[in-house]
Amino acid sequence: MSALPDHAAMHLLLRQGRGPAWLSLALLLAALVLLGLLPNAGLLPMALLLASVLAGLVQGFYAWRVQLDADLLRLLLDEGLHGEAAAQRVDQLLAATGLRRRAQGALRGWDLRWAGMRGLLRGQYLMTGVQTLLLLLAVLWPQP
Image 1 (tube, rainbow, N blue to C red):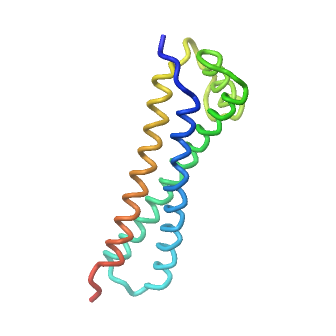
Image 2: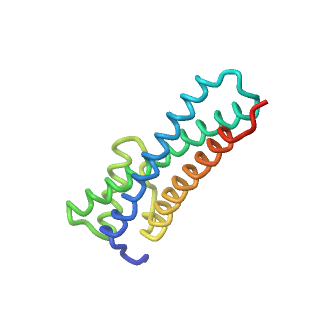
């Protein structure tokens, strides 16, 4: 059996995804404005801007998933659930909303769930960094 996690600490960590989500939204809007303002920019800057928009959309998916996990943890804390009862409640909620198939067999342990949550948060930070880099490259690229 996997070790019981500290749901409060997990929730607080996942809430750190709010900052990159807001930054990414601002970068996405900036890239879209630049795409409209610079229609005669070179092919490479335009491609970099489009790639930045794509990275922003991927980051948005990660941000949604991180926030969903944070909200689920908040619910578990509010309901006072831990261990296997908490895992069953999460799976029940995800299945009821159609986000997960009904589990067959044993439940995933919290160590795997926690690793997945951290992976989503890392993906969110990574996509925000990629988006920032692509936007900066597009803006700083020498114009002909």
